[in-house]
Image (cartoon, rainbow over all chains, first blue to last red; front, side):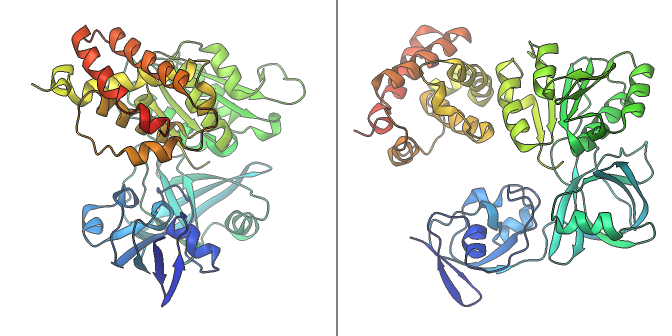
Length: 318
Length: 118
């Protein structure tokens, strides 16, 4: 079995990723998404070969220097690694507004200290401190919103969300990364129909993508289904209803899965409601975000309903 | 001209993956083997398999194929036949000429011993 050497100690990889292997031994490695996306757990190999998969998404210059992502690195031979600075550039930002969108979701607005390039639907890393970081999708749209906005769900026992709910306030200076991720609207097929399905704070990137598509003059249907247990779990309901009134091609169906649905809401699991409304998704573009089990099921079911694999975009962060 | 080029290279494979994998996931004989799997990772494997079958650039090792299927309980010829059938139906649906389908089927058939661990 290949060994992982870190900090002068040697560990059996035993089929685990470098990140799993080290954290299982009590070694603390900053990490967040565990999916090879956020680049928080980036390390550099000082000896041994790095599997190509562990370098997916890294900039060429980093690949050339043997940087890799610990969470997707399954060593095939002994590897000696050191911690690396983050793969994504960081910058300071100022919190300009913190508001409750509902009882469990905070809307946070940020003003970056330097020009900030991004696409609606991408995510950023948000640092509580150097080692404590979480990924959040952007709900804002360049060209519409002056500031960045995030929707943060209160995670029970969550270190970062707990801190935000308790003490984050306008005027605070915080650190964020540049934006990354490939779940965003691409102009170029204005007639294509778009289905968006989200739960909870998974609405954030979808809210950005929808407004970006409308701003780009998208002509095809844009159909949003947003689900929660009950109406209290939903938010931006009025804004989305107004958006639907203003744009004939945009429709919005808020869904509740428990109890009875009041007028104007659909009853059922959001994915079921969406597929009932759109049983044939041939040629559609699909965006999914929220509860990981919902997203996983939705990837398969929208594909079986006819959407092309390459047209199904899942945002991993709610 | 190779089989791969004749079919249309990577663009053709990408089109074929959608059709093929959709058939596999709807096939009552084999779909339970795909329950709960990460679809994106699975699709990458299906693409690798189709690329191999269609004579494209691949680094096929029987070892990977053996490892990838060793844990699947009760896997037998009937399941492999079902996949072969879906492959043939996919290529037919994409209007691939019969003699090329036969070539692809022959390459795919050569993985049977690895998939079924013989």
